[in-house]
Length: 263
DNA sequence: AACCAGCCCAACCGCTTCCCC
DNA sequence: GGGGGAAGCGGTTGGGCTGGT
Image (cartoon, rainbow, N blue to C red; front, side, top):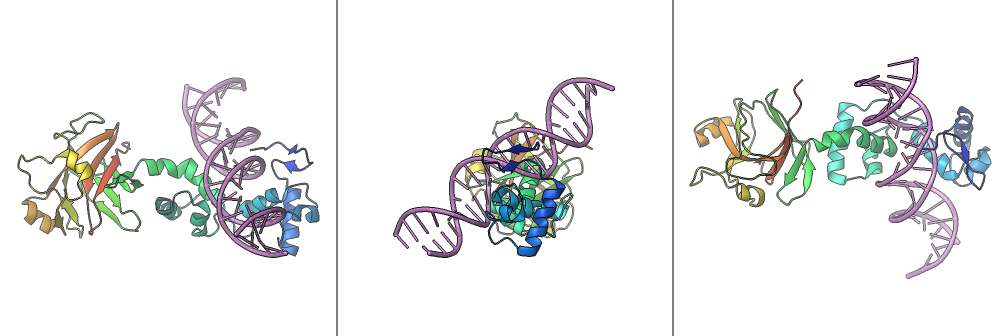
């Protein structure tokens, strides 16, 4: 940013706005509106370009601008919409009253991008999205279905077994998830296999690999004979693990979970 | 207290889209 | 249809702030 005041070769002022400039801009727009931004600075007595005036008004001076920290709800909306729309900041901002595209964009780059990175899902068509996090210290996995508000929280996560190194995919990569609550969740698990181990290669490519619906933990119990789901798991990178699940009839997700730091 | 690194965010730049003639 | 000007949009910059050493 040009925070110290500078002048362009055409005499146009750049840099941080002074209180007096703000006052002039507010006063003019309140009286006349802004039918023509290019003409506005001349008429308002400002040594700025129209673009600069427009930006200052839209991002800072117009009424009902909300300042201060983003709420958890706003964060969730941004994360969800960014997943659906990508960097369509103005569209995302339009869903958040009082927030500007610049606000949303800055907030994304300074805060949400990291959050988003720590909870990626890779779907079976190879595209990345977000929504899964693992907190093994608090025994929780959360799964957020792309393109919906639906979040499933697996309430207990009793054991993990990661036996391979980052980048490896082999038959000894297993994730054991024990569910004890009677929750209305749907999970597809791998069918019993001849050798007892799923093939991790299929895990990445075969959408039919997971074939059994389980509608609650009672069904799960009757299906598996025990309240334990064993699914293939890959060590994706340091502190990141991948596993697969499916619920509510949605397509197979290959979830990348980041191990959260212990509090 | 001084220095440094990383973060935050206001503002700019350049490209795209829209709209009017 | 197309040319030009205005507005909109997203990427990027960099000064100030803050927390750590």
